[in-house]
Amino acid sequence: MDSLLPLGTAPRPATGDDLAARLRDTLRETARGQVHGLDEARIEATLDGADVHSLEIDLTGVAFVPGQGGSPEAPSWTPDVVSRDDAVLRTLHVGAHPLTAVDLPVDVSTELQGVRFSWVAGADGSVGAELVEPSEDSPVTGDARVAVSREGLAGTVRGLLTVALAGNGIQLTDFDLRIDQTGPRDAAIAIDASIKKGMFLSAKITATASAAVDDAMVVTVGDIRLSSGNPIVGALLGTMKGRVEEVAGRRIDLAEALPPGVRLTDVRLDVGEEIVLSAELG
Image (tube, rainbow, N blue to C red):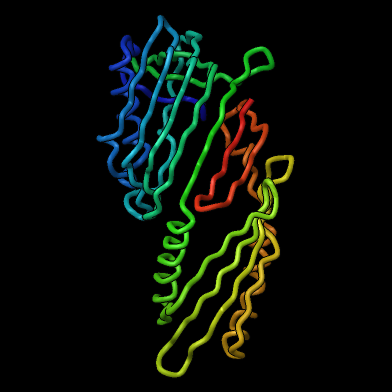
């Protein structure tokens, strides 16, 4: 049931405009007030019988604002299913040039081909769509690209850190973020920051870390180190050793985060004026 998408009441969408309107309503429900600008998003669909020939969702100008409303989650829909009709979404394109996430402009482009699904009808008169897991004979193929500017990322991290420190009466007086590519899927991260508390305590803090994506498409964050030339601040950083080690051992399975049956075959990281993460699906 996790792959069920509610689309209102029967009959199921018979035109592209009807499908687009229903998808917009579902997105609003999913967002729960944490996403602004959905009314300006462009959603266009073309139907070909039971199949969806193309679906294009342009989220340019949409802004994700965490902390407002409830936590976003997939709409809950558990109908007593009375019928399923097989269909295919031949081409899905989702883009944003850009959307805004926590004040950070993010450029997104994703295209998928051959997404199998079923039109579902419930005994209560509701209708929706259910994703069908791809197979060797009917794979989902495509690609995805996410890009942020180096300067924009540094500004967002500085803003988040400023707010976090201010809650403890600490002022962030200087900040520099560096990201260097160390391999096709690897990067080294370094932060130099200066802080001040009251009239008597000031210090420089250095933080370094590495991030890598392995052949199994798992992101690992490691080699996290915090240091300061100020002995008092250095001692405080030492008390955070347990938390640092917990983060350092964190693994994020990119493949597991995809819809059922969609396989991630390759990932590439490119670091320049933009930080670009691209992926191949197949």
